[in-house]
Amino acid sequence: MTQDEAKRAVAAVAIEAVRPGMRLGLGTGSTAKHFVDLLGELVRDGLQVICVPTSEATRAQAQSLNIPLTTLDETPELDLTVDGADELDAHLNLIKGGGAALLREKIVAAASARMIVIADASKKVETLGRFPLPIEVIQFGLGATKIAVAKAIEAAGCTGPTRLRLAADGHPLVTDSGHVILDAALERIPDARALADNLAAVPGVVEHGLFIGLASEALIAGPTGVERLA
Ligand code: 5RP
Image (cartoon, rainbow, N blue to C red):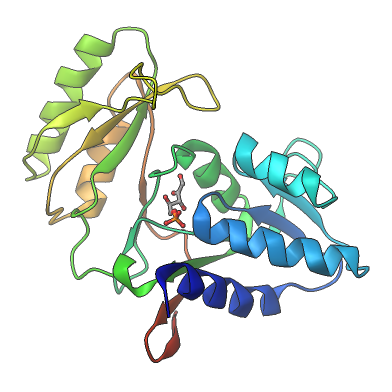
């Protein structure tokens, strides 16, 4: 099975959790894209759901599939969000934001009664941190924010450089909400909660990619099938 086939397989298991009338959060990324494609097929066949996308890319995909969309202003409580992850550990703590959508992803996940993470087996780790941690910051005062972020990282027992994420054109990547992203290459995050708390306390940090206690279950596609973690 290729990695993309694994992503499709796990999305196909997640789609079984969808029920008529559900209010859904739609994730971002190549795995979530498969889920949205499958949802589009069900909607075409008459399934009624209402969805909040976590990025402009997912909004465009959902609109192209005629999936009914809403906002968290109109529909502030969701039944289920299905989203991918860049890393997950055995406690369902996640790193997200590789696709730069972490801010909306976290708001949507927090508004959902349930969050199912869908991932291929390469995303499962013993300790979070191999994937550089995305930290969304406002553009004002970036130099000062970088220093404060470095101190927050160090105080949580982590080390490693933090780099401004660039877009394909070489300019700083700007998120859907108009911010920029610092990627912290930490290798190992011994205490994710401490790091999350430290980063959240830095002025200028809008959100970080540590999702702690938000996922209810994970579906992980490996060579022997789909494993469920809950
Ligand atoms: C986007 C995300 C994605 O869920 C994460 O990057 C996983 O993406 P993919 O399914 O393409 O591996 O957090 O901000």
